[in-house]
Length: 486
Image (cartoon, rainbow, N blue to C red):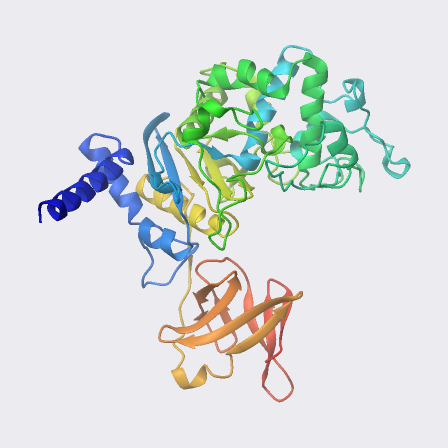
């Protein structure tokens, strides 16, 4: 009995310690806002019923192992907190210090480093990039050689280049050089970075273009990319826990989150290596990324120049095509309203977002160690933060009226569909009609008519298609047809 009592006591103590490890101490009013954020997740639509849910419910629904959140209020980090596990096998909890792969958010910090070189007159943002490339030259296609590719083009994804993203490399893989990556030569696992349209014509997201900017930084400075970024950007911003070093140094091992795939399996080797550091290689945590956001906000106001002058920061935040600025996206949810700058990120096993307001000192960074399906919960958490902290013109949900369907009328919709070679299934449950679009997750169908419907988890246009005999023939999903096959 004594042994049993001791075991129970030990388990209780461990549970308390785990909770405390994930719960830094804050003033009561801040704790109250944290609790409100944790129970107010919301999606893009409101129906009048079950419009909010808890973070715990969201993590369970999307099979997410760990989440880390940091919130900016009045140009300060008000709180940072971790939830769930950084590593399941070790039962190691996520804390505010846990490091995640920032994936494409790396591009935002990269743009600060590049513009710092421009600030120091070591780089003209509007010159041909081949003026600065020494170890490699961009091979212009004769079809698109009328205009030069510039650094402005690279940072705003308007250079018309290939290779949108990178899958990373397993720890046991041979790592390619940057030149091998840019030329698509083994052991690189992506194709060559080349022009497919004339620069400046339109937006084409290209991590390949960002990788060219990485090589330019190295050719100009003679430094390794991670060393340059540490000295010129990360240290200046106070991002002491962050690093572009790939693979990450051994002394950070205890802080690194393990990545998990959408099906719950662990990424082989716990995480991938990204020699494409500028495009996807930053390891960081939400608090450190908040420091980047706050500096951007203050510099935009003309109140700080830790890395860039206010003039250079405003240039970085000037959109080139659509909402694409230099290493960041800037948009208004309503024409003429408050503007927000953001970047999302997704590596194998990781997904994250960083959002800041340009008009006020508000923002949030959310990082997770589960990929693909994670972007849904990122938006839901951001909506919760925006609601609790009363961000202006950010969370503006669509209001929809749901049409109730009788259970007997649902049979005709159920079955198997095929969308571009991938299976889509619809089944009937006690909740109503459920559709499976991602992995093994089924989401409730909300009808707005006998043919049109929406999903709370996924913003899109959905309607059932009927043949001449008024039988279901397929589903229109954002303009693509999922054909009914059973």
